[in-house]
Length: 200
Image (cartoon, rainbow, N blue to C red):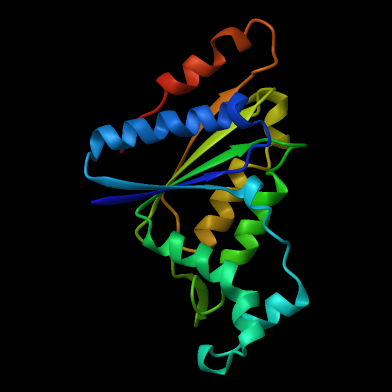
């Protein structure tokens, strides 16, 4: 059985291209792995709070020393970490906003970055602990950022690849629905993105 986790970080609701692309990726995954479970988390609707000093402090307190208030503070982070560790395949919807990811996705990343749980340090430096996962990124953008002059301004795929790799998720594939606002490109951009999906 494959456990699939779908993270949504679009503000566009049913009109979202990244959500449509994410669902197309999931359909392909489910075709390959009929025996599966799917958990979908809308990070925007969840309104994830940014980390505060109070929450961050709880990350470094042994579990048996947490107070009742500490337990409440760390509950959301623990939930996200458990969802991540339970998943075999993670599909991340990541529209490009102002050259980078939506703040809700960044907040999720902050909550799952837990020393001793999702990463640690060895004699040779950082060691990712979230191993054996397959990550698919469903990226959407009005312009073209995979090549040409826009490539230097893509802080979505390079960032996710780098940071998730830091946590141990080094097997990452990105599919792009790009040029969605570019005349002569936008007409076929979504179908081209869907046709590019290959599940390995």
